[in-house]
Length: 137
Image 1 (tube, rainbow, N blue to C red):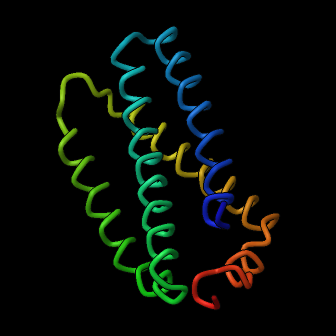
Image 2 (tube, rainbow, N blue to C red; image 1 turned 90 degrees about the horizontal axis):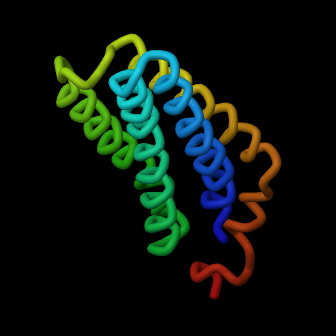
């Protein structure tokens, strides 16, 4: 497993679990519209994380330097897709804005904290430049 996958795996897993739990709590508190709003807000953040992981893994398989070269364009693509998703949901009757915005912000914070924690604990540099990588072989 690549260093990027190790960093994202825990954040993706725990964020998905928390999103489901938050959706259930919102369902119990304020009904299906609140639950859909929480699930949608969290889902956009989780989809962004999955896309970031896919771009990083794909770039890593192409070449070691491709990861650096792809980081800014992949960020731009992911942000455009996130903004497009938010705009597409604007004014929809099944979205309650306070729940959506709260879930979006909390999910983003949780993902950032969990990835930062994993990044600190993962020897990703050693894995990226390990002699068994395609670049050296």
